[in-house]
Length: 429
Image (cartoon, rainbow, N blue to C red; front, top):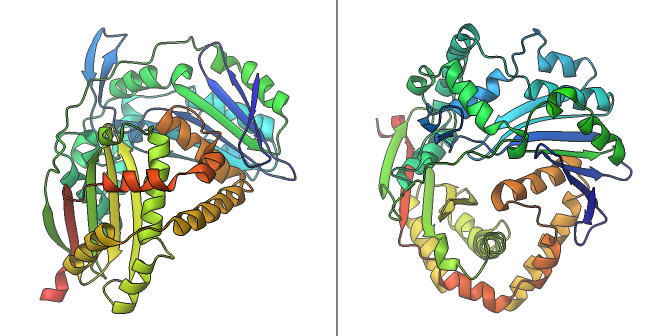
């Protein structure tokens, strides 16, 4: 067992890699009465083609299979529903699928040992039949159709199709009704056996827990330890163009009550090769926060002029690309885009602003560590995005360099962009 600490906060992390490859992280919190556990696989909707060791060939699975698999893990051969099991002890449980990972988690205050054992048991006990797979297709199609009526969800998926021409990032996490209807129990077993292997999975546990007890539960779980270590499957390389797939689009929807703008920049991450991905993400996050954040001059001016009523930003890595997205409610999308570009090009960030942002950011990071689930979610994201926990996050923020920030800002090119405008269909009637 190894122990390390998170910089700038009084929080220890205990880590051990099991013989079958499972990585286990335990964070004991002081003065907490609750606990949170998350068991996840590094398998999300982006993986559609991989080498099957069992079949000795590259195979392709239908779009949406990762999300479908998440649903089916809650149907057990013994007929016990995990939601009902956890509800008996007042424990909350759920699961989620993202582009890069699938998570199964629970939180509560009692029955910790029983709950953790059950998490390890049901996630490691797949039960797929032709009948239960067929039954799930209608449920997931209904979920997909409901999301189509959500303008925010629709906008996010549509913008991704505009950004990418071939990459699976352009495909909705749940897939489409057409792709879901083609999923078979064989598809589910193929992907489960390939990626739901302890060597491709992690367990995070935190809160009011005893470290030795957690590791003892893991080491003595019969089902988990009966699974041999297997190599992580090779994936088929994806060749994606740097240029966005579609520059401009206007979509009219009945469900839109306020006009919305999605504006995205697609950057070649290799342009910033001097910085590792974690450090680059923090620098770009700081640049965007200073220029366009909730307390920025830009946001105040745009609200005061009535050019927009809301604005938020996202940034993410997708393989060799870095995506920056602006989302706004506005009836003046073209004007807002011009203002965003002008402000980015012409506003001179001062060193005092960087220092102020660093202090606020550090305070926010420290405050977050008072929340068990938020802390674990942040560390889990580190593992998914960067391959390991970033223990020096706070120290790095404190040491962020003003000159380096300006150098990175100068390399951000807004020319490779795309614009999505959502309007209410009835407004023009």
